[in-house]
Length: 306
Image (cartoon, rainbow, N blue to C red; front, side):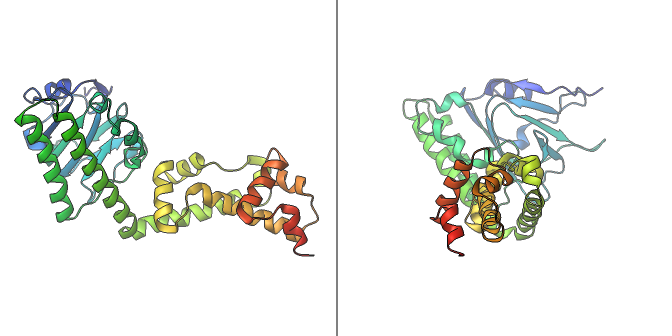
């Protein structure tokens, strides 16, 4: 019977042992080719929890890759980004062999110690747990990424000295910034899927702001909206900023302000009553948000209609 429990891999060396690779040349960072990895035995674990970052550039990948509870879109995409501590699984059809080519960069968080990247790596949203779309690359983009990966491997194979960490960190930052650029390009070029998310977002917000839904359920939060759309909060905000110039939070606030204007101009409800109908616990919070978005207090806005 196939072992269904996730296999914990804590170090770069353990990963090399797990995939029957030679010992790593550097204890905290490694670049390997998928062609060098032996096929997993039938009874080998098909899911793992890695205690380090993994960036994969894959070709001819016929299996389904699960990251947390999400399935990566691998119909065309070939590049994925995994953060430490998350479950990764591979699903293949019975009798099929997992054969693919490409590159894998793995690096331990300890490798980032005492560098600015230790703090800024969390800002790269594509490492987020629930991102469900791989990065699609053109041939030129793939060649750029492959060149950086080869440079990293060459650096730690040539020598390891006091300069090695900074040189590899510099190359890693270049790779991450290219990936950021390519994801932004993807948000724009993959219009069908992205516009479907926008349509579903608008339908979801319309439903959440209908009637007395805000009184019963409270204001929707960014994590709730992202979960309903089956994407991560960071991914959703990045997508919306690229397509509309506004984050998810700004979209929510726009809906609140539009509903508030409707009630202020079309009803005799007091400002406090409107605040409670919009899901605010305190009228002051509503007034502050309204003025921040319109430069007018709710009372001033109402008076402008008299």
